[in-house]
Image (cartoon, rainbow, N blue to C red; front, side, top):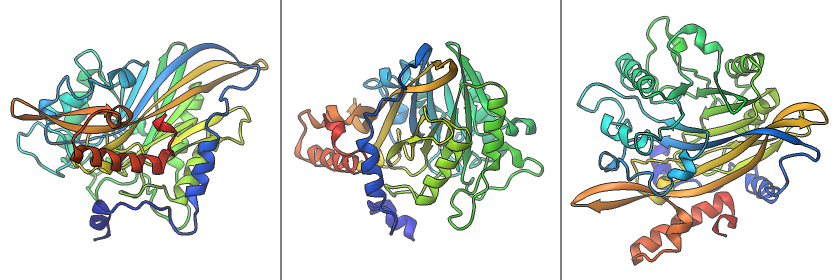
Length: 385
């Protein structure tokens, strides 16, 4: 009942006693602190984009070539692009499982912009990956492999669960690890609990065992990865601030060896921070607590609002010591908009700053005003500049 209530009345305050509004306001004031230390000499760089959940939405099937038209450069004009595939695919024509899952036609609209611009990596450790059982699990992974899209967080062989995904590009070896808080109470086939990386993040009493992610981070380090990104499918849905326990877990994973964290599942945006690590005085780690829905089955402004993140890594030396550090980070609020073409609805992602400066009718203006207020809550007002 509380979940249903929150879906129409999102929680805009942090949990009682945490004062996270002040915590993230202070983090925003630190946003202009340089990432690279004095004396850093870079040799090569890698650009990365990350977005939130991709799920079914009415009109997606008519949106191929249109969905990303206004933001394609932000997402795909990079070396590596990452998204959360909030769905399992199936060969069956009838929709089965949870309503949030994509049809094949809708998947073709969200997998990339035009045939040559697919995402590099899909995070597949999420609560919907087993909605269609093993048929859906296998078909999803067969499809991604056929499309040439990497996936992280799910495993077709037991030994893969001990490892992370490693991509080497531009002389930089990037490691990715991922886990989800649950799989919607779906049953694992006997002996195949390894197929999804599950960590009960939402056990907000007592210590959460994150040893599975630590093992994967250690593997990436053993393979001489220069930079490690952890993808976490977690958080309380329809709440605009993470819980303090999440912040503690995120900081712990960074101190263990992750260098950045991207998060999804809440279906609305949440703040981010640049965490100054104790293990390395030169390292500030980006932590994005909630990227929102890039494609959304819901049309309320807080559910159609999301963030596109872009960051650049640079590999080089500080005082003769090799390091790969974040050079810059950009966060762009975007909104899913619905339009009509010959009587058929289609969807398009647009920058919120462009929308609010355009001419719209009164209803659209109120919709955009509300989207802007939620963005102010999470990012402050600097995004409007």
